[in-house]
Amino acid sequence: MLLDWLTVILLIGIGLVLIIVELIFVPGTTVIGILGFVLVAVGVWIGYAALGTNTGHVILAASVLIGFVAFFLSFRSDVWTRFALKGRIESRMNEENQQNLEVGEMGVTLSALRPQGTAMFREKHHEVQTKGEFVDANTPVRIISITPNKVIVEAIS
Image 1: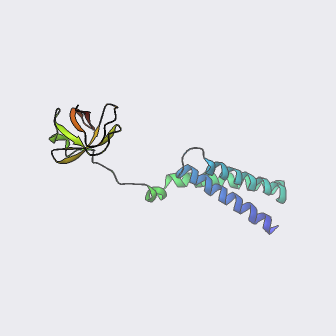
Image 2: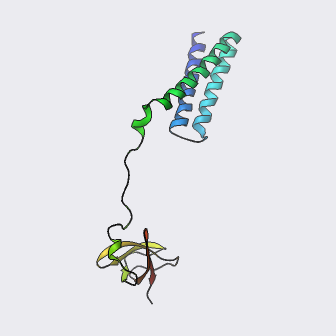
C-alpha cells in the first residue's frame, strides 16, 4: 500500500515538473510535455487501480489542482526571470567601417566569396557579398552598392 502511494506521488510529481518545464523552458509540443502528461495519466490510473475509485477521484482532483496552481504561480511570480537572458547586442555589422567605403572603390578578396566572405579595402577587413556568383580568394573586386547591412561587390576582370 505504501509502495502504491509512493509510486503515484512520484509519477504525478515528475509528470507535473516535466509539464512545467515544457511550458516554461521548451515551448511547443515536444517529447518532454508528452512524457509529463503520460506520467501524470499513469500515476492517476495506478491510483484508481491500486487504491480504489474514491481515492482515484481524490488523486485526480489533487493532480489537476496542483497542476493549475503550479502553472499559475510559475507565470505570476518572477521566479523564472533569473533564467532569462537580459543582455542585448546593440552593435551592427560593419557599423564603424561602412562610412569609410564608397561605391566604385577597389579591393581584393581575402577569402573565397561563396557568395559571402572577407575582402580588404584601404588595408581594413570588411565582410562583403556578391550578387550570387562565387569569387576566389585574392581576386580584385569593386564595390557596386552599399546598404545598411551589406557591402555588395563584383569581380574585376
